[in-house]
Image (tube, rainbow, N blue to C red; front, top):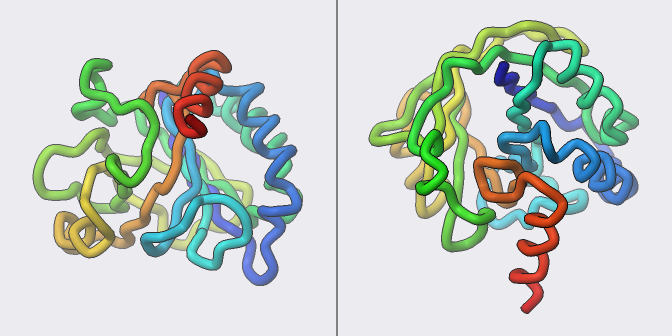
Length: 198
């Protein structure tokens, strides 16, 4: 099943920088389960790394057998020790879109391939992946669960917001790993890093 995990950053002083290396090791160890994962930001311009105030959390789409497997992966993440305050788990099995076809997927995200996520409204035009989100569980109190999530391309945050009028929230995804962006194994991650540094 596809489980969407919405990770909310802790208020106040973030521990993202302090915990980042251990978080990265954890992500690499669990790469095979990730359709898509990355930090989310409230505005353009974030590198997705460190204690950037624009960062507001992380999003994961896991391909797992059951919620218990998703919880075991997510709640062992070092970011649970002060970077994230809460993780909400959603059934996102009905998500579909252009990324269902491997030929339409990018190899990583960056300035030339910017992704945004709209919550509780599907954006105008064709989404990369979109569908209803049904709350399954949370590590904290969820006052207003999201009803759907949609990943889509836009040139910038203004264009993204224009494509998703009425969205509860639109966030930027500055970087990502996972099968849907061609980085679903340690070898593909190494290839991606090699391309970024050459």
